[in-house]
Length: 299
Image 1 (cartoon, rainbow, N blue to C red):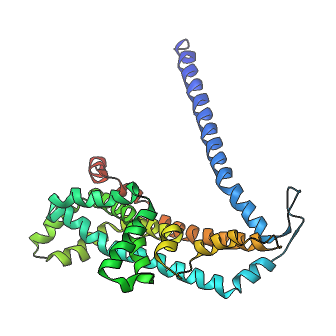
Image 2: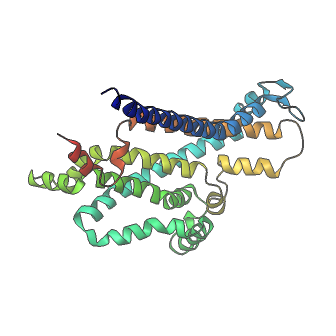
Image 3: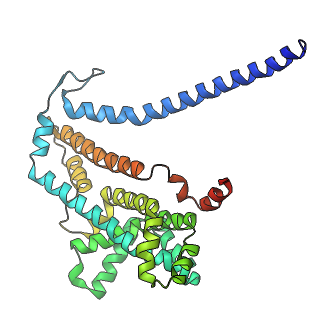
């Protein structure tokens, strides 16, 4: 008995040492990732508050002048308003189109599923400028009055954000087993639109919220397609590009750009935090096959 005790204790010590090393490696990895993401944003924040920052490690002095002048600039405020409205409409239109389409392709007519998936892959196969040029050509033939208008920009943003919404929603449908839920609704005599509203939407909420955030972020930061399709549509990315092109070397030129960058980061960070809070404990349901795993884990 006494001879066996040291033999058992030795593996336990080795296992404990291995666990400690693994935890230390994980902590170092997360610390490195945290610094990788945090340091650039801290530098932008400091630059938005700096009066002068040249050869020193930190700014020589700090001021709120750049924040005050930026938030009081009607051109920047209008650009933020346009960007937020455009991103919100993009997310709403994509969700309204994707949910019925994904449901129909998965439940009602699986034969069109390859077509829908191919449509979702097109924005990744083609540059956004090509998509914008195609929109201009098509609208010039079908509806010339749409060219250069805000609705055409919304359509362009919906096209490039469609894959993110579709894959999030489709994965959530697969995880929820939407086919069986739809059959149960039909057994109870519910029509298709009632099934979508009362059964499909509540069970794929994590996918809808995640897809909406991705569509919002895609639209919020899009520059090339907006500039090509929308003449006179002034968004934050277009304002930022104009600020860089028109740099005159005067104090405050890039400080105001840093302020706009921080505000944009804050908006997207808050939305991401809301999505994480809203989907807490449900992230695994976005993965195909999650419903099967859940059933196996049930006693």
